[in-house]
Image 1 (tube, one colour):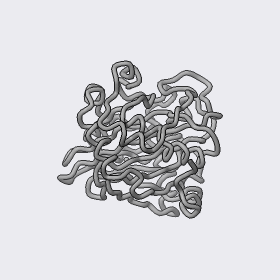
Image 2: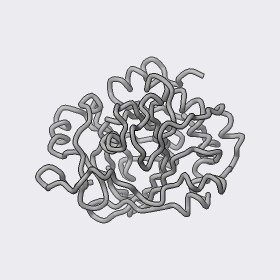
Image 3: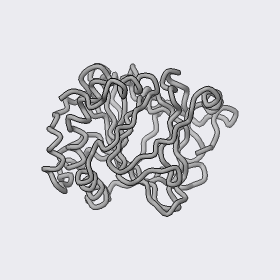
Image 4: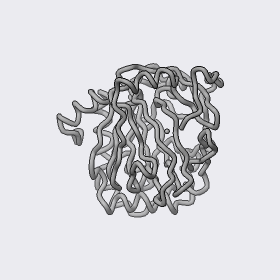
Length: 287
């Protein structure tokens, strides 16, 4: 199956560092993914909190290998994998997936950062990596939708450091300069929409102070030829078995099995090389 992106969407990704695909998963498929996130015991057992500088928490779950659950099949589906292979120029593998759950009135913010700001320190030599964020709920400005800095992937990797709270953020002085010349876009999405974004695209989000929760499923991929040169908390190249798009609906409400539990991370992990930076460069703002 070829990429699901049109030529215009493909060009937008190259130019802007992101593209939104409306209705990537239909209402039935999105309902299965949402219910699995809400009720799968493996998900519930592996929640951890990631707090912002004000102490507000985003609940998260992270798993390294996709497995055969309905959400694992979504990550392995042709519409996801073939599109990522088109964007990254060759074979990809599943780097990890995660649920980010911002609860009503209390979901935390995220600082400006690039994913490659983390993944570089995991031993990935090249920024041949990208993610797809799937909206499980309606995501709006009010409930803390993702914000992206348009075209910021063209800046290359920016220095990152540990911030107040529990997050790692990009050099705020450089981010502020970038914001003067690049547009900040609020990626508002309906359930089933997906945002594909480059690993060097700067992004953040506000706290959720609305009565509506904001849950998203994020599937991250690395190019097979970008195999990390050392062991770390996410996998080295692992061949990815693609499945037809229909597999998601055919699976129904299929949970992770017992053998897959080892794929879940027990807590958030920061790159060992990153140390707390001074307030002159790094600020305790809000993703």
